[in-house]
Length: 168
Image 1 (tube, one colour):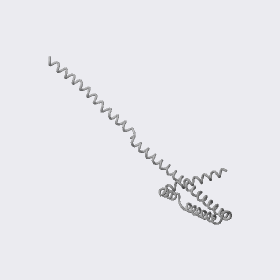
Image 2 (cartoon, helix red, strand yellow):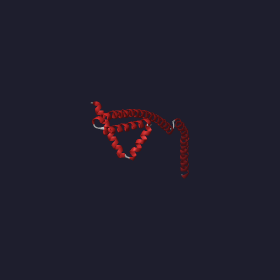
Image 3 (cartoon, helix red, strand yellow):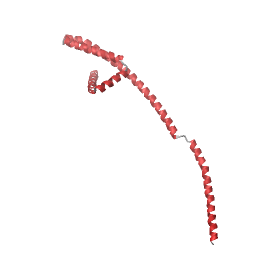
Image 4 (cartoon, rainbow, N blue to C red):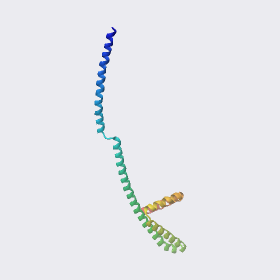
C-alpha cells in the first residue's frame, strides 16, 4: 500500500509543476509589454528640467526689462532733480539781494553761498550716472548711518512742506 501513495504524490507534484511553468511563461510576455509602455512615457525629470530652464530664462528676461525701466525712471528722476536744484539755486540767488536790503549783507552772503552749494550739487548730480549715485549713497550710509537717517528725515520734512504749500 505504500507504493500507491508514492505515485499519487509524484502525480500531484508533476501536475503542479506545469501550472508553475505556465505562470512563469506568462510573466515574461507581460514584462515586455510594460517596458514598451514605460518607454512611451516621457521622463519626468527631463521635462521638469526643461520647464525649469525655460522659467529661469523667462524670469531673467523679465528681470532685465524691469531693471532697464527702473534705470530709465531713475535717470529721468535724476534729471528732474538736477533741474529742480538749479531752480532752488536761482531762487536763493535772487532772494539774496532782498536779504541784503532787509536783513543785511552778511545774511545775503549766506544765501549766495547756499545758492552756490546747491548749484554745485546740481552739477555733480547731473554729471554722474545713476549707478554711481547709488554706489555713493550706499557708501555714505555704511560710513555714517546716523547722518543718513537725519538726512532722510530732513528731506522728508522739506518734501512734506513742499507738498503742503502746493495744495494751498
